[in-house]
Length: 301
Length: 259
Image (cartoon, rainbow over all chains, first blue to last red; front, side):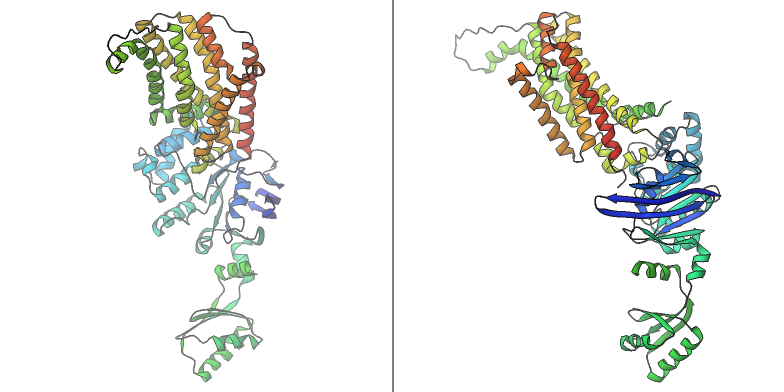
């Protein structure tokens, strides 16, 4: 079932068009990753959906409710969550719980539950001012969940964390995913591949690609040759474009990835060339394009 | 509990935790007590430190109690206003800067509740400080100089508080409008003193000005009578306060939170 549908969302800052009329929808119970380079308009889009920012034009239809205050239904974790540092973790949760129209008793009960869940039970009486970045992120996740929102929006939930904190938050998201719809932005493509059901790729204020993760991958999957040399052989690599089976050559130092149209013919011919020319090869691997390749393609286009 | 109450309680809790609830009233008490004490001991102070030649006869008229209290209010008008503005300057701007205002507004909180809870918090601390400080001043004045009728004192304090409420509302307005605490303080103080100065200089044309509240409160102390034009000034001041509050709410709505 459809949870919400955004139609023709536009956000202008003066003359700058941050978001240029995007339309998309999110199904209930899905975990959706919003990808895109910095400045693509991800945060602006999420803020419009959360009700914190008024779109210049366009509508958001949330389960049939159009133009209403959606904040009641949405839990939001901003990229840099901020708190009242003089409050304790629990105090803050009870405070925002009450702001989200929970009764005091209920807010306290729910706070305890969430503190347990995000692993902050030991720190519940400590002042937030002394929390580490990872703890703040987890508290931020707890405050977003306090009123059992129908949609959880997370803006770059893991990009500021160390590998350990990142793992923790990702695992929590996997748990939360079972109960509620999640929309999160990230530029860590690996994370998106790991936990999302659907993806949206934004570029320059527009949606470039959207759909189920598997079907997008399927649709854009291309065979790819990864060759690593011991030294740079750029001349030879640049000459490869002349072959009709080569569609793209990306050189990164000693490593090269070549997107092929015809894998069978391509690998034979190229291997033969390498042997004939006695090029200093180290690795020759056949694989498939990843989400990262797709992302790079969209962004560079 | 409504969201407004939750926010107001948070404001009060914050002032308790950062001791504002303590030190602002203490400043007002000190400002209030210093005046009667120094008026009382002035002849002795001059005697001891004045270095006046032997035999000089000091004709120091002791001020009346009402005069001392008027002087106290005038001190509140300078230092008191400065302290209040400094303590209130970041009320919205700091929360906007840190991003915590966005964390609050991401919950279904009406924009008006946020601004009005801030306002109510500021008014609470201002009135507590003014009344406690002034009460202390009244007590020392009646102890050392002469007793001023309590009802007159109270009346003057109530009238004076209208001026302080105006100043606080103005601070809140600029704190919503601007970001830098320095510029907020500067502009607020500038506007407050400009209004006071213009009201004094162009008295004839400024009978409606909020700054006349200081004059009216003094008038009540001296003569127990409300001067004419009080109600005009009162209504205009209230109207300005309401307009400032409504504009603050509108401006806050337009501001982008969580940048």
